[in-house]
Amino acid sequence: MSLKRTSLYEEHVRLGGRMVDFGGWELPVQYSKGIGAEHLACRAKAGLFDVSHMGEFLVEGPEALSFLQHLVPNDVSKIVEGQALYTVLCRENGTAVDDLLIYRRSGGRYLVVVNASNTEKDWKHFESELARFQERSEVRMRNASAEFAQIAIQGRVSPSIVQAITDLLVKDIKTYHFQEGTVLGSIPAIIARTGYTGEDGYELYLPWSEAPKIWRALLEAGAPLGLEPCGLGARDTLRLEARLPLYGHELTDEVNPLEAGLGWTVKLEKADFIGKQALSLVKTEGVKKKLVGLKLLDRGIPRQGFPVFESADAGSAIGAVTSGTFSPSLQAGIALAFVPPQLAALGTKLYLDIRGQKVAAEVAPTPFYKKPYTPEGITP
Amino acid sequence: MKYPTDLRYTKEHEWARIEGKVATVGITSHAQQALGDIVFIDLPKTGRDLKQGETFGVVESIKAVSDLYAPVSGKVIETNAAVVSDLGLLASDPHGKGWLMKIEMSDPSQAGLLLDVGAYEALIAAL
Picture 1 (cartoon, one colour):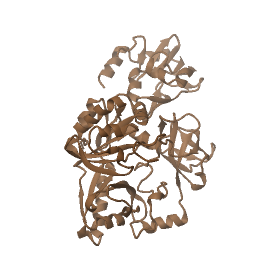
Picture 2 (cartoon, chains in turn yellow, red):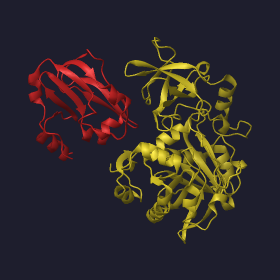
Picture 3 (spheres, helix red, strand yellow):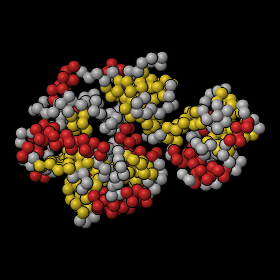
Picture 4 (spheres, chains in turn purple, cyan):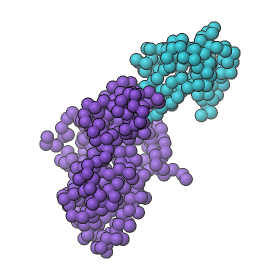
C-alpha cells in the first residue's frame, strides 16, 4: 500500500525532512538540524509541526451534545462555545479506543480531533454507537479528515508568529480555547490555543490545499524569532517530557484512563456514559497498575517494552516501559512505565533491564518539564 | 565526503585502522550522520574476546538503537574514554578522535576481508 502524504509533503522535502512511514503517512521524523536541535528550539523559541494526518470528525444537530456526553467519560457540557476539551474515548469495559479533543463551535456544532492511526477505528466506533443511540435522527456526523490540514506552532514566541498571519487577536485566546476567522486575508481557519509539547502555542485547522502557503508564511514570520520546523521525533520527545500520553504507548486497547493517570478526565458523577460502570468499579477497587515517570540514575536510554524490576537481582519484572527516550531538556534517560501502585511513590528506586543489564532509575515527578514562563496574554 | 584511504571498512559502517597486530575501530561519518544526534554509547570492557562480526556495543540516537559489529576478531585492549564523555567527537572527528576501541587481532589476515576505501565509497553512493 502506498503511503499517504499531507499537502505539506513538498515543503518537508524542500526543508531536508527525513521522511518515514508513520502509521501509513509519509512524514518527516526530523529535518536537517536533527531532533535534539529541533526540540531545544521549540523549548527556547518555537517549533512548527505538520499534524495534518490527525483525523477530524464533525458532530452536529440538536442532540450532538447528548450523543458526545454518552460517548466519552469527560463532561462535554462544561465547555462553552470557543472552548476545547481533552477526553479519552472508552469502551463498555473502560479501556481506551483513543484519546481526543472536542472543540465546541457555534450553533452546537462540535469538531472532534482523533489520532491519525485510529481514525478508521474511531469512526467505526462513532458510527456503531450512533446507530444504537435513541435520538440518532437528531445527530449529523461526518468524517472530514481529508478536508482539514493541521499546523501546530508551539513555543513561547508563538503568539507573535501567529499574529503575523491573522487579524484575530491571538494572545487573547485563552488556553484550551479557540477562535474561528481567517489567515492570510481570506483563508478560513480555526486557531486553537492547544498543543502537544508542554509549551504555549497554537494548533491551526486549515483547508487541506491551503496549508502550504500558510506553512511558508509562518516560517517566514518566525525565522527572525528562532522558529524551526520540527519533525515527529521532536514531537515525541517534547510530549514525553510534558508527560502527555500517546495512544499505542500509555493508552491502548488494554488500558483504562484511571490507570493512565487520566482520572481527571473521568466524570463519574455524569449521567450514564459508555464505560461508566466499569470505571466506577475500578475507582472503588483501586487500579492494579499506575503510570509513573522514571528518571535513570545511571547511563542508558529506556525504550518502549523494557521490563521494570523492583531490585537489581529480581528475577521477574513488575512492570514495563510505555515510552522512553533521551530527554534533551534533562540530558538524561526518561521513561513512562506501568508499575504496581505500591511501587509508584516518588523517589522509589526501580531497575530497568537494558540489554541484559539492570540500570537504576527512580520514580520522578512529572511532567519532567514545566514551562518556566507565563504565556503572553494569559493571566497567571 | 572523502573517506580516509588508510582505513578498512565494513558494510555495517565501522572502520578499522590496522597497525601491526592492533586494529583501532570506529564508526564512519556516514553512520553517525544516518543515526542523527548520538546521545549514548556502550563499549565493551577491556579484555573481552570478540569474534569478527560479533556485536561489541551499541550507539543510540534519540530515536534509535544501533548495534556495533567487530570488524576483526581479537581481544579488546583499550576503549576510548574521551568519546564516552564527549559524544560530540563522533560528529566532529569520526575517523580520528572519535575512535571507539583497540583490538589485538587474533587473526590479522581477517583485515583482508574488509572493504577498501573505494569499495566503501561505492557502497555509500549506492544507498
